[in-house]
Length: 445
Image (cartoon, rainbow, N blue to C red):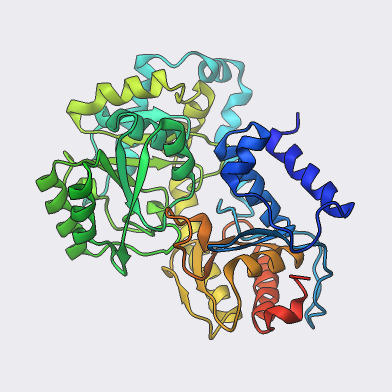
């Protein structure tokens, strides 16, 4: 069945092709579009994002979204390639990861083993999963408790459960001013207001967090202290101490997103303040999207509240995913994939440095994403549309900004999905686009 938002995108595309919507025409604001179509605001946001990805519209911060038309690609002197290369969605993929995972799961060819994996998730299975998880995540600097784990159906479900457990409807959650985009939809669904906190090169600013709490009580703070998405920053030791002192003073809990933490040896904030940090992690990027297991590591007094939030929110992990995930953690496959993806991320960052030399970028040398600042007349939304026509999907800064109209002129490049050759080809074409003036690409005609 076609998703409703995709059908709406196709309708708008048909109107553009038929001339009923012409280049330069302004689409209504997303909230107005949602009202007119009788859809949720989050669905309207997906419609506009897909139109942008297809290159059918361009967005201008503070002005709105405009029809871009179907102008041809600029005649760049660059080796051609076929198909769309995705630098938008960030699921790190190794050529042999399916073979490694398949080898681990081969035991399921035995009916008795498969039957056990398909059986209901009992308390006994959850206790065993906690034991395996505690052993896998333990390091010299953090030893999580086996009984502290609560399992959900993925990272997003874990985040939803954490917010639901800590923040009432109508409450406020502090977040980085530029942050993981899905947190906006999750908060809207839960009736929670996101409060953007100003950042510097070390993460959120303690003074800005304290000011936001004075303006209106916060229910929690959502942070990505390790390889932050989209900027790639890792919070310094000094800033970690400042933030932890402040949340203790303000009696706040931190929801600590460590989805990219597997690429670093930096321990979670929970290693310094277990009573103040809820660790959120998942296996989708570490292993593969199909291994849909989310982790919440919770202080003892809150564990039952979080387990209830997962159950009542319908965010529970499926028996099959839990069995697969725990098997991969226990037999060494997850550790091997982690080792290989760390090396792969470094290699991909080297390709970026080679192909986009001279451009201003922010990135951790071991991360799977790059924050590319734009100059020479390019605006983020215009470049996103031009890149889409060149067969490259990137994400404009506005997707990560919590406050509309307050996004920097930048795009995020996600490096994980293409092959190395595809990544190099896409970055070279992107570099050629950046070397042109926007009017030379004929994208606003």
